Length: 174
Image: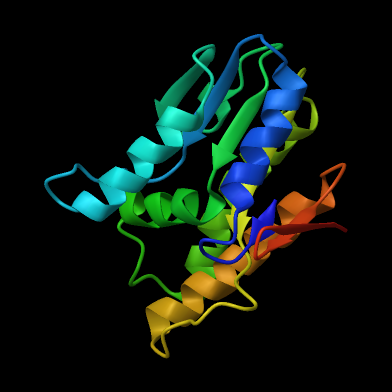
């Protein structure tokens, strides 16, 4: 699932997972840093709105450890790979690393993650941002982030059964 900011991709992903899970359990993974309401009240309100839409049978995990979120037989929604990447770089203290070293870090994490996603025993819905269309700051961190997330998106998409592009609430299955 990919698209721009505020395009409806998370809502679409939730609908896909709800269909896969039926009335049964599912897991929603907020893959990046989730600030407190004190730090960013607007973000906290968005998180609360997302939580209120989810069925009561879903559990919510706020973690960058996507492997731990893959419980056997439980459908999972991961929202979003962009925040997962941000968390990975933050936790490694990697923003100032060389581009080659950053690429190696991301490749190693993807090498651990992708086999688990491909062999998961239930549906996994991944949300990400389409970096090719977004406004990217014209400084090194912005360019590096765009390039790394583009690599993440391409590698993840290569192992997916379907890729959905969401633009202004409209869905195109690629």
